[in-house]
Length: 249
Image (cartoon, rainbow, N blue to C red; front, side, top):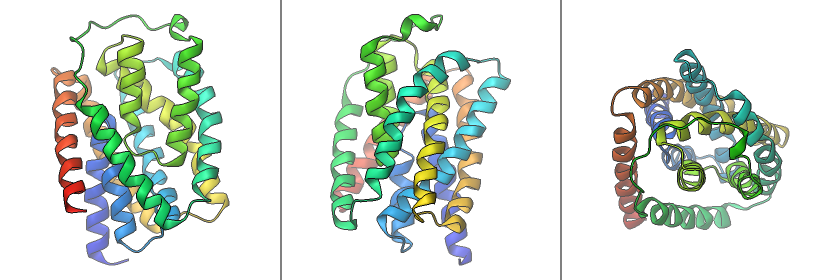
């Protein structure tokens, strides 16, 4: 691994961790970077998850330290997500490079459309409890888990659609629950890639160092004044990045 690769991975990881915690879209940076460095799509997909696990550990710790503890609801939402993630990760190991690249392009297009949907009016923080666990939500978590296990790119958008639009909770709470649920389902998903030999630990761990730093900054900004406003601004920046990348491709 060259010095240039280390620097690029650290920078990409930091930006990815920041974006993932603040809103979504970090893997749209790190996954292509890993592929550009010569990894096949499956190994890049697996290696990318090392950083995702560690960045979500960092963000979860930061949120808990700040007094945000939605562990009970988060773990209950994670159960169906884990089931979906295991199937999704296993499916990803069977997909060839060419097909995966086309899927990645389609995912970027779909993600940009979802991001462009107008946000409802800003909501006040509500009390989170088990009343939010309804069958449509459980089914949606299975789907989100499958998607996260398969590709993970911009999975935060799906959380915004489900938790913000359907459950009616504010964007800060969405991100607090998101990092916990992603952490729980990503560990077994990563295990699938490890078991099938599709993780480059050198690239993955360097990427993770940057991701953890970015995640800490993102979690700090989410909890700070105007956190929800920053989330919306970051989302708009992600949309612009997606459009530019699609034009260049």
